[in-house]
Length: 525
Image (cartoon, rainbow, N blue to C red; front, side, top):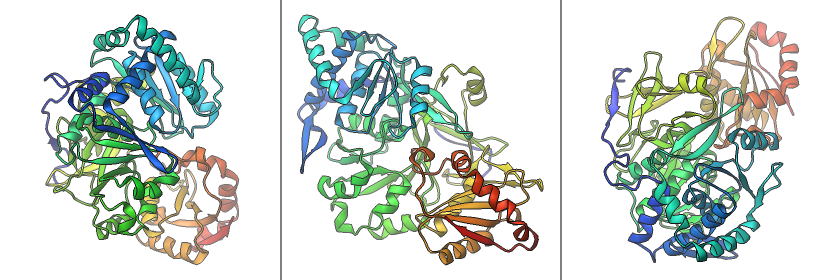
């Protein structure tokens, strides 16, 4: 490894000060002017995909934006969207921006009390939802048609009403407020600007890997900056996007959409890796993977299929991608090099620091957390531990706060153990407990036979320090609750341990023998 304190990347500015349309509405209008009749989006319609051109998109977005203005959405007003990704939510998201508002995207599987909390803390004036939401001023997806009708009536009497809102927007205005989970399960809202959100689109486009001849399949939630970045990147480059947020339809959609690239997260890529080449649509050139580390086995399988997987790094607070592997500059096991305009460095503590136009302005109504995350020189402290190799590739090794101390005084990194576990027992999850306890125990969520799990744990222990070894485990055959998963499909450790607290306590109450001689005991649920 190179000097861990070294800075890599480039500070070359591509932040909207050079004529680039650095607000979301200007990005849309720029694309409409360049390719008005090209296909922008494909929407599932029975057995076929219905196309919409960029001109169609502009018309629908403006109708809805005018409707929002007529309903009282003003400059800076926050509007929540809690819905599965689809063409209509894409239009609604863009309409909020064109009305001068701020989108508050909420992950659709979020539990009800957290949805209410985010809506309340964000002070939203309206919520668009495809499910019952306990909030005032809720508009169902079906209600968007009526809102668009209202907008068309307003545009007939005031045809420039939306254009005026767009003209008044500054790149430094807030574009989105996205709540992200803390280690303890709480959420805090990252304030993202138009300059920041459009920066990522341009930085990715300037890699030269994509063009207007490409087509992507977008299924990722728009409450996830990964999905939002892919949406804006396609707008900047003219890529056509097939939109269907149903994760269980991804493999089937690959065959019919025939995308040239796909953005995804590891747990879905694990399923796609079981397909054969001809089941991928026949045109897939590469896959972009983010949100969590990809297993080496899955990456190798895609290489066998002739489809490289390019891992990237980006989190909510950076508005999207900061580092990425590229075609021709790809190093497995890393998250690639910094994108143009992004600087990265490693602090003395080993923490990854990022400075770029995409970095948030702070956490909403949380000055203490904002001050802890953003230093005076503009560096964002990610909380992730990383190294930079001699060629500038970034390797994420863990999380600074993601450790606990056992009662023997030893520190354990549960996420690192879970990552190693997935490579040894694909398709299962390990949640480790042991804080202020004499040794570690684990909940293994799997349908694999007990001998397979035990053998995998032997491998894990062989590669772990003595205090990290799993002395007892319970094999849980029931699937994890949706509320206990993050947007990448990985367990939220604190929530899982709270749900299964009695099982964890039983492992320690009955595990005295295991602690004495190092033997492992197992139970099944």
